[in-house]
Image (tube, rainbow, N blue to C red; front, top):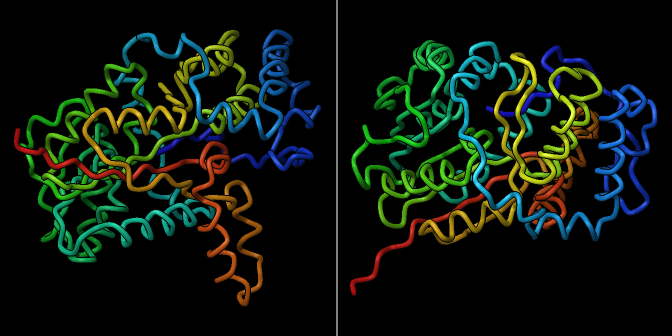
Length: 349
């Protein structure tokens, strides 16, 4: 599950590349002129503060301000449920961007997962990844807060013929995994919850629950929306769906990472984390960092172009995407990112 600034599938003409190589919408005057005046001023201030690569690196590695460390209001789970009841997540992974994301995510799983693992697919929605795991011999519990997406998953799992490898399809929230015993899983794949949990307490609770249900040495694969990438999506949203981005939204999101949608349609209860924040959350929560990688890497936002590259170059393209996917500036700006961490084994005292 993920942020979708454009629910009507309108194609955008993105702004040009800034001289330092960082994608910068501040060059696209036609985009900014569609903002309401007050929002336009905030957008210009925001873009001017993130225009250089040096600043991008600084923002990706440090807190934005003291305000982000304070407690925010709790997440409205019902707004998230409403959003996903209308969102076609299964079809999203058939789009060029979805295909790239899925392929590269599966590469991470292949690299780190042990054979025949028991996996909790937390936030797995319609079951695309759950089916992938089951087809490769893993045992899977699929968990999500959206009953609508879980109904889709039941149908897709049956069609794929992997029901015997699916141990459960459960409607749960990431902060409460009490239906699962301690040390139950070899891996937890959390592609979704950390896109939304607005308060530090909620994220800490979810992380504790993931650790609790993992066996010692178990793996957590946690996807998140990097702060700078989320802010760019809000600029697109402000231009095309201004009711969703009321005055003050951009400023708050830049400072705290929290996005509160001003309308009932579109992405709800967003949280855009800095890479350092996610890393610190899991390290303090009893995990050892193994990897921090951009899912789409430099393929983010140019997925259609990748499809037109000659087949003779495809292997080289994939190698290049993987080579740069762990650079801090790429993790901070090139779409959704994934942290891979191992639950630390407690040492006897």
